[in-house]
Amino acid sequence: MRLLDELALGAAHVVGFDFGAAPAFALAAAHPDRVLSLTIMEAVIAGLAGAESFLSGGGPWWFGFHQAPAGLAEDVMAGAEDRYIRFFLGNGSRRGVPEDLTRSIVRAYTGPASLRAAFEQYRAMPANARWNRSWAEHGRLRRPVTAVGAAAVRDATARQLCLVADDFQEHLLPDSGHIVPIDAPEAVASIVAARASSVRHP
Image 1 (cartoon, rainbow, N blue to C red):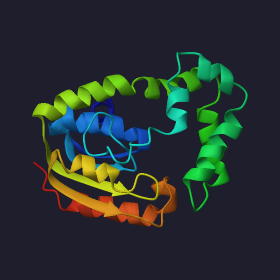
Image 2 (cartoon, one colour):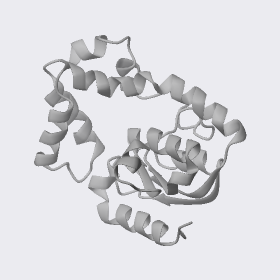
Image 3 (cartoon, helix red, strand yellow):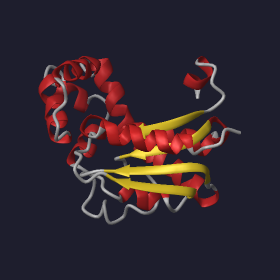
């Protein structure tokens, strides 16, 4: 919400990908007057029902590693950021992440403070899940909501959001890897633009 204030925007079309889904969903749930539409891509929203079958085998291995007590993951990763991040980018995209973008991402996550900031997102997941469950007991998303799934999360996001959204659309991009903005930028832009153009500003 602070970003909207800094940009002097009363409301915006909000898009969240992967871990960006958590703040995007929280903004739409807690401040619906600031969100014209919500699009969530390739993410499971902690605490919301609907993704039980997707999570039946447990979360990905790195969730537990990143959630380890503060300091452990940072100590293990120090000096190996480039190799570790390239592993995830290489597995997350079928098209391939451009080298200049890869280097920028590596720089952003290099160093103890940057690693700590990255891993704290995972450590906050239990608290986020409790808040989301509490909100879902009484809340609904009244603004238009769109779920975009690809090869990794598939329809899990849609199965969550359809339970709490009044105006819901689902799009599946089976030929895209997890990093949909890289693998399917044209499709993503088209989905977001079409949804935004259909929304009447209050």
